[in-house]
Amino acid sequence: MSIRTPAQIEQLKRAAKKLTRTSSLTHAEALDRLAVENGFKNWSLLTKHSNRSTSAHSVPSVPALSVAAAKLSRSRRYYLHGDQCEDDAEKFYCAQCDLFTEANHFFSQHPVEETLERCLNSLDRWERRPRSETATQRPIGARNMLEQQARASAADQEAARAPFHRWLERQKARDTIVGDIAKDVMSDKNFPVAATTYAEMLSYMENVSASDAAIIALKEAWKRFNASVKRAGNHAIREA
Image (cartoon, rainbow, N blue to C red; front, side, top):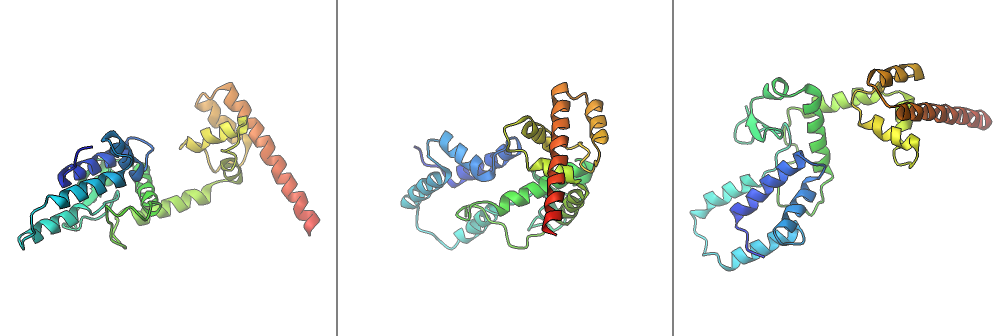
């Protein structure tokens, strides 16, 4: 296992960020994968080994290193999609393009729904990251130009979902045809989530040339959904 210099570690971090955009891995998982590829069990061991080795061979610090230290601190600043640049308030980070750019870039170069969803996903991954992951930093209250609009859009979409769509989401883990159609529907961004009749959903399925098996599964899901609604209604009557 060879020593990694600070510059090489920063290069690996950038590679991890790119990997999260092209896979389903979280940032922490991407770091661990790159660590394994470089001969270490995980990212924590890679950085500890490199830091320890670097410290053992480093020269005494001098006042001039304070500038380098400041630059290193900035390099550890982690930017989410839409975050404002700390050094230039007119620039914002686009994770998809991996660059700082003007505000109009996000909607002129990328579909609105896609860029708002990317913002929410990055915020969610950051909030769920292991608290032990301190290699990168993001200030509390960091300004993100997309966050408010992204959260409002997500709230509107959630409010528009019909009871059937909400019920179907809870079936994703089932190893049945209903579970299969639930996973398909949840991954279909164009599915009519506000639909309240089977006819509306069947029309959509036919328009996208869904397979006979998918239509049969949807019909079965609709049947079970209505049965659950009926059971809930009877239970409510008995409780009254």
